[in-house]
Length: 232
Image (cartoon, rainbow, N blue to C red; front, side, top):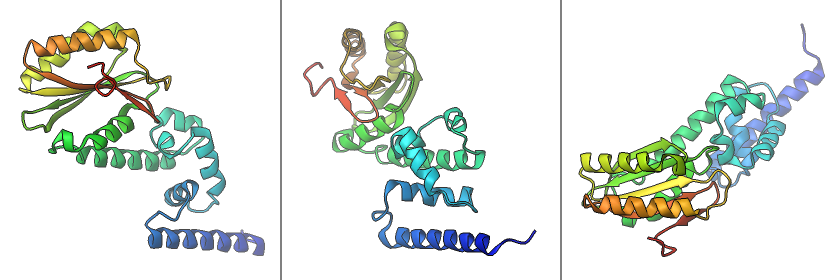
């Protein structure tokens, strides 16, 4: 079936738009592009023959931002009507971003990388729809030797969780730990249970010569530090 002149004109327009957007991407290294334009560039390969600008804008509005979109589960992305190719592209980018953030904190003095640690913890668990616990085990030189994540409702699993953390710390010969968990509600203020669990963890760790450097509560846009707020 032959395409009409209108079809050819539309194809030429779309190609021209993509070429211009890619050129701006190369020239500015992405700094000159809006969020939806960056997402357009990502969608080009997965959706080769379609104007993806409306979809990019729709996704950002639906999910509330780039990282919230990139960190969404495959199930939710599929529910949004996205193809496996698009979902795969989004998952690859989020995986690369998270691993790159992790590389920035491994084998480095945690006290000289504190903001990067906060950024990594927020990226890794701040967006989660259920509560997760992340533990960074640190050696005597202040370097992270193990990064573990656990899915758990902290008040319900607190005694088991504390026991697991202390046991792993002893196995790794850790000198200190950083604990973090997320509040899916977005409210990062600690509950009474959070405060009690922190006290129990500090006491249990002290018994085996491990220091709890901080306990942080994460959301996608904020965090709470027990240490900085005088609770540790």
